[in-house]
Image 1: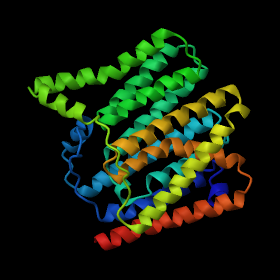
Image 2 (image 1 turned 135 degrees about the vertical axis):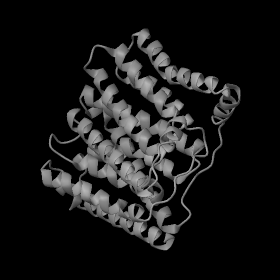
Image 3 (image 1 turned 30 degrees about the horizontal axis):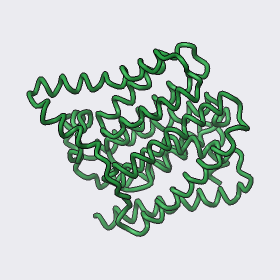
Image 4 (image 1 turned 30 degrees about the vertical axis):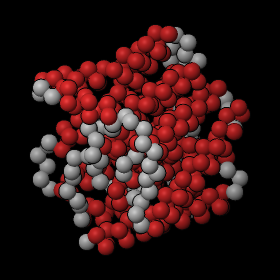
Amino acid sequence: MLLRYFNFSYPSRLVSVLLLAAFLWLPPLIMPVTLSNPQWISPLFELYLSLPIHAMWVNVAIAFLINSITALTVNSLAVHFGLSKTSSYLTAFLYLLFSSAFPETTQMSPFLLINFFLSIYLLNVFRLSSDKNDILLSFNGAFIIGLTTLLFPPMAFLLIAHFLILRFNRVNNIRAYFGAVIGWLLPFVYLFTYYFWKDSARVMWSIYLDSFKLRFALIYPDDVLSDILLGVMAVFIVAAGWREYLNLYRRKISKRRNIGSILALLFVLAFIYLFYATETELFVLFSVPVAIILNDYFRFVKRMKLAEIAILVLFFITMFNQYFYWYYAS
């Protein structure tokens, strides 16, 4: 079964992970769509769109490469910080499965770039429990969050998760919190300078601030198959997240802090999804924390056969959903 197969770090497992992901990304690679500007202000993604890429399949190939690098980064930090077996590619497999779930997520988008930044962010803040330089780590983490807001403005709310993570790691140095605010604001300084140079600062900032207005709108796919897939994944997220929360007190201090950090990140991302999502593809933002949480959850699950069947069914539904959608789109 898939869980046991990818729970080893043989080179064949790595190749298999990438091949399965490539199989899910094959339809958009064959039938790519034209990229368009997002509905919100996204300066970094607009910068990418300005690149002279004429072949649309190249965008899909770049997106797949970024997604694969993110998967390997997430897998490495899970192994390094004790949230996975010392030799396993299971976290990478789970990340690629969740990030490739819907047709909208298998193409270049701001959210795939955000996932890459989130993996670097976690790689940074997980070191808070062992590194004494908490001011620099706090500044770097908040700066990365600031960069994600240049892709999707509501990601600014992750600063709340960052403060919670600092508390989980018993960071009491007030300079670490001030450093976080400065690091978080720094990308905005660059953004203001850019729009000021273009003589559009007032208009763009009013639009930018308007994007933070709360608007509850539960976004879900238009087709039944994707709705089922979304529901199954939501059950996985809630079940694994709740179990990890209930078992926090049983973990060692360092693991407790890291899992608490993941849960804080997951909670704020859920808030962003519920109140700021405009497209289904925003669901891909859950992939980084969910891959780590699920991997840790499957290490201690008692009914492993049921988990194996559930993941296998999830994979086949995902595969069928991808090919079914692109078949009718053609």
